[in-house]
Amino acid sequence: MDEKVEPFFDEVIRRNPGEVEFHQAVREVLTSIGPVLAKHPEFAEHKIIERICEPERQVIFRVPWQDDAGEVQIDRGFRVEFNSALGPYKGGLRFHPSVNLGIVKFLGFEQIFKNALTGMPIGGAKGGSNFNPRGRSDDEIMRFCQSFMTELYRHLGEYTDVPAGDIGVGQREIGFLFGQYKRITNRYESGVLTGKGIQWGGALVRTEATGYGTAFFAQEMLKVRGDSLDGKTVVVSGSGNVAVYAIQKVHQLGGTVVACSDSDGVVHDPKGIDLELLREIKEVRRGRVRHYAEQRPDATYVAGGNPWDIPCDVALPCATQNELTGKDAATLVRNGCIAVAEGANMPTTPEGMRTFAEADVAFGPGKAANAGGVATSALEMQQNASRDAWSFGRTEQRLAEIMADIHELCFATAEEYGMPGNYVAGSNIAGFQRVAQAMVSLGLI
Ligand code: NDP
Image (cartoon, rainbow, N blue to C red; front, top):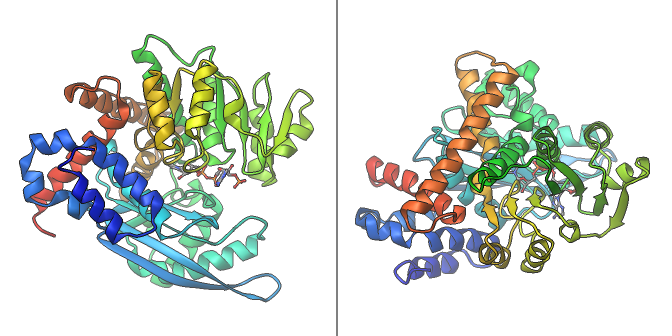
């Protein structure tokens, strides 16, 4: 990290004790932006770093609800509205027992720069709860979502703050949240949430967008190197929304995904993951990847296994933060992996990123590679505002263009700053510049 930037980072640690994931996300961005500050002294004058690292607003609230046995449960809700220089706050809600303020802040911070890279008018935010949806009935999920929205609604609005899904929050949860928002406000304000069902204001391709976008980004990185996904062996971690549609797009682009996972274990299917079976298990039955292996004679399941031990040409981490360590990266490099695109947010540890850089592996960081989800959310907002509905083909085409543009922006910015092929630096610098310039223009707010 540039020595001029270090004091800002020390101050972030001092003001946010114990929030290790937030520190990690800030460190990654600050490590990249030394040369930007040298080129733009006005950013220091306007105290952009100090302001950008401090959320505009943080809300923490009690979420009381009753389970099916009549027992009262108390969870904690969060919404961190990080930066609105480019547009209304935008970012998903995560329901997972690991959620705490530091996790929400890391995700919100990343979201600022990711959203800037899309070129759409959206600021950065994130939210969620430590509520654990696993094993809960539909009724319990509904009661929790209603209680969560009963507090959150007062902070939202189509021009104010627009949440979407993330881990543990899919179309079912967005439906319950939207229903409660509508009931409390007496407004059918479609643009207040994205990831809605297509019958009630959702956009085609939003469900697929993050996974598709990640595969498109991998394809763009390979194209620069005179290569493509065609014929490649791919490993995807996770088996949720992002993973499933990354698998689908890789298959459509001629690659073969041979493994995926959940937090219990890994399934290895050398002939290629049968997507219809996986979707039926995950989306209809809400089952586990071990159920997949039970129905596919050629597939093997390893409880507690590590997806990165399986040899592949391309790795797509699509589960959660810090799931791919330095050791995993070394294994992937040893096994001949040439490209990594992050579908998840911050899945690769700093040591893992260093290992990939040293081995010249094409590495697409999450804030660029998984930006297709939020970009398509912005397309959903656009359709809601104009009371329009685009076709699947038109929306997917737009998504592919946006991902190619993000790739080009990160690639060109890395070149401009003398770090060719470094998408981490390219994405951090390009995203930071857009937000910083807007903050300067808007004055001291
Ligand atoms: P889902 O809840 O649909 O799926 C998450 C998947 O990751 C599941 O297979 C889950 O397994 C696994 N997983 C979650 N936590 C852990 C953990 N601690 N250890 C191991 N496996 C874990 O979430 P999404 O697919 O929506 O999100 C996945 C990642 O993509 C997240 O990092 C998210 O922030 C990021 N992302 C999502 C976007 C979206 O549009 N949905 C947009 C941009 C980024 P299990 O079922 O066992 O918990």
